[in-house]
Image (cartoon, rainbow, N blue to C red):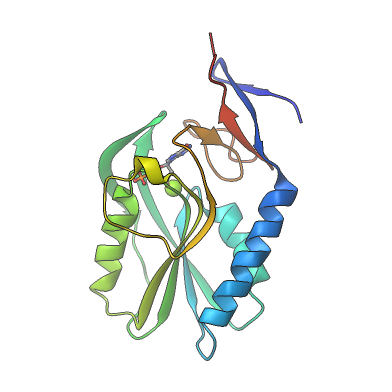
Length: 181
Ligand code: IMP
Ligand code: MG
């Protein structure tokens, strides 16, 4: 795998697609076991979580539903701290087994607001699945239930994660090179 460049910045290979695929299968197995006897509703947080949600949803070998919500809190390479809801949830989630599907938890501000909003709708259970987690960046008390990879607080792109809208379609995950001069 080669380095890639976006907006004049160099990124190097970080997590390969085979590793991502294998980990998603493992998470799907655990989710299936935990949700036995229910028809879980996956809530995919757009835009970034769509590749993860598509793979996770197909890997969960049981009756399940999926819906989408759109939130935005990031600009460039830093969290703005302000979470804006762009598309709201249409489904009634009362008494449902709900799994929020996120691409990454960084400060935790986005997921915290979403969890608070969804809890008001009285789901039977509300869990968080995130492909990536930066525990050292966390500024809130949220704890994801299903984590693909815990990573150091570095900026990454690919597999849904973007740099100002681009690079989401990279099949592998790349990290910003330390020495970008
Ligand atoms: P939080 O609210 O700080 O937890 O940020 C969550 C959102 O910020 C994610 O859903 C991503 O859209 C974005 N984000 C956080 N870290 C990264 C990164 O390293 N690369 C790209 N986007 C990121
Ligand atoms: Mg996101």
